[in-house]
Length: 210
Image (spheres, one colour):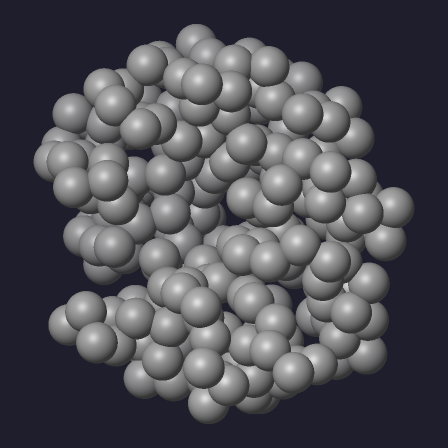
């Protein structure tokens, strides 16, 4: 399993999607999830509507400093596929994927050659463009609806699977993590979490680096 920090490894909420959270995550070799929007022709790190002063994508890549750490890019605005792909290619970032864009925009990312994870949840049981996607972003909005068999079926189809940990939706992750411990030795399995160090400790015997 690969542990992914959610919006960087932050200790207090104000650190989310900031330099200190990204630096902490990269220094500890955690995979890292972040959010991308556009403003005035720039790609910015921002979960909410940007004001224009947010960190630029290029600055985020500078903090990465050439490390081969998996990056999960949450697409918050349509129409960024070509520009994003161009930046990642020019900066020689290879270990990354996009997710959470609209279905029509997913086609744009696939056409641009960007690595795409499709979404799957209790309201998206038939993921769009599953065969064309490199992986699946496995989410839940209510109670946990999937089990290890669902995950293993996706893995057996040659898909990477990134699981949204329960605390991202305000729930206790204990039961989910206990279930995942039985299959966590698969290197194609990822966990996006607000508690990356706890996850590393919990899955210490099965943690892998991408």
